[in-house]
Image (cartoon, rainbow, N blue to C red):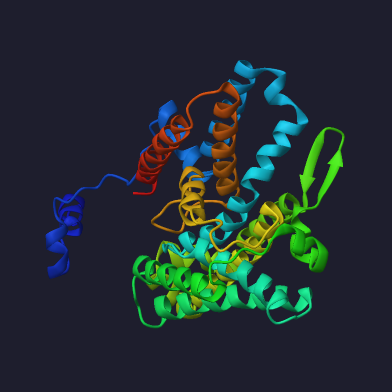
Length: 363
């Protein structure tokens, strides 16, 4: 048999199923190696660093108001005054961040905060308990409210928006009924329970004034940043928010995680209630009514995705500071306060639009 005949025979399919391969593509697979445009590179950078956008906006905001107002805005007192104004929002925003990272939302954070502060005050003055015990009861009240939210969302599979909307109304009504809409005066707190005003005390460093509430906010955010980025619990929070079914298959107890997140959120709100007493000096059942909206505003402007699983708690703080800079800066300029709400509204819509644009990278 000639060599040509042998080669021809060898090239023919020897098995029936191999006949379908005749004429198929023989090119070697290769990856798309074209260079990305500058916009695409920037988009990928923002996708990997979600807190970069609010940080850029914050720096630009400070620079613009600094140019307009000069030393009046860049003074140490003004800078720390912004921190004092956003301390409560920052603490409540930390609670909201945990929930939103799981693709949920908590509309009851402000009501939990106020009810916890009322419990601290009423337990001290109505029942005569030591302030330390009253504070512990207030913290436990906040954790209990969060635990109930978590059970309804995780065990009964109810939508977080509906659950927390209903709890907001229930807690708000309970707050007014229990307190009889009475305010405990600052003088009475200072005389009988100064511990309740602890977070209103301050430390002066030159012209800067730092309250213990500001220090508590910074420490809380630092601890949560470490937990979310360097512990298994934190990774599970992101996993549940990104894809709960995949997280379940990977061995994460999704129901337990959701309950723990909402419980911790309630506890943090109770801490905000304690800080609120120090901030305003009294125990008022009508204080902090817009904390839920303000916390969501800080989270959204801070670059956290409302779809869950993406974002940084540092971004939330940057978002809260942006609102604080705009509020104080426009006030110092002497503009109508409504301009603050207008610009914040524009920032919220812009933040969501940017988030959608960044998410196209993952898609």
